Amino acid sequence: MIIQRRKTKEIKIGTTAIGARHPIAIQSMAKVPTKNYREAISQIQSLEKVGCAIVRVAILDEEDAHAITRIKNAIRIPLVADIHFNWKLAVCAIKAGADKIRLNPGNIYKKQEVKEITSLAREYAIPIRVGLNSGSIPKIFRYNAKLRPALKLVRAALDYVKMLEDIHFNNIVVSLKCSNVLDTIEAYQAMAEKCGYPLHLGLTATGFSDVGKIKSAVALGILLSQGIGDTLRVSLTDRPEEEIRIGQYILSSLGLGGAGPEIISCPACGRTEVDIEKIVNELQAKLSAFGTQQGAKPFKLAVMGCVVNGPGEAEDADLAIAFGRKEGLLYKNAKPLRKVASKDAVNELIKEWKKLCQKS
Image 1 (cartoon, rainbow, N blue to C red):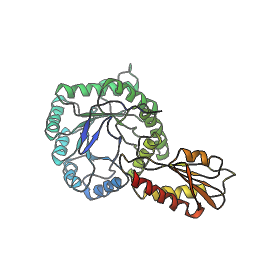
Image 2: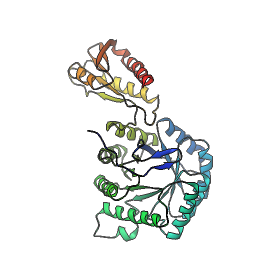
Image 3: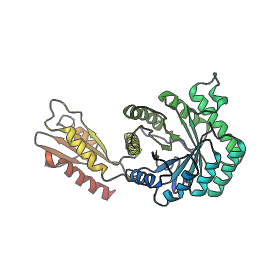
Image 4: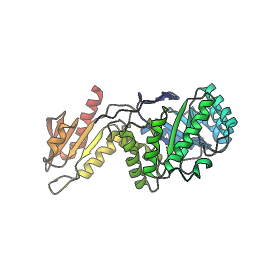
């Protein structure tokens, strides 16, 4: 199956372009007060190391907005200012150097205020994300009993987009986040049919971290497989680096890049004579230490506990190893390469992976 990405308008967020011709960008959000700029910088720099492409910060007051300048000078990735309630904070954030502004139609909706924001956004050549959440929909749609929850979001988003277009602003990204998986899927599918702007995927308030990972994988996986989505955030009640890691796994599982090498491993059974879980965890930890590169060529590494599926999996992997009791047979591009001791298997796989990376 080949995923055909939805065609969209190209939007530039700082130096990062998004849209159907460009890699899907993984975002996260700093989880410390923006005014505490040293902490924010430290967290964002940590996110950069694990492959975050775009980062968002919360702007609660002017001190937060002014901190954008300091933060921008210390990071490499585009920075998005998250604005609610007070339109003047959007103006401050733009002047401080934000690469994109997120506006919530549920609490910033007066046309004159929006006009002031778009005028400055146009001058600074930055986009606006129309960011809807199921918990903050404009009242005119929120209490419309005739609309399903997903369509309330869609109608609200389209209404806001029309207001922006009417004031001649079309540097737009849209998001429609629900905490419910099926509502999220329905909202994005409907919006994808009705506008040509890039869509930022995500759920909101996903709950306990493990549940949030599963809900995000289901909803985002379905949408991405349909070619819908240009940026994404896996919102978790967890460390922001974990949001990036899960986002990378989701993209990698669909062949859309994201996580460097994909590890394929067997679940182990009575035939397995090595500690597969230990080997795979060690391999993942060492690969993670190398970080990730946006848009890098994906590789598949297969780790199999016996010879039943090992040779077959090797045919579909760039590198593979099938274990016996004390050693494994290492494959490269489906061809047997050499035998390696079980204790050396991880280092041998990484050595061969590095060679593949150099040639790609």
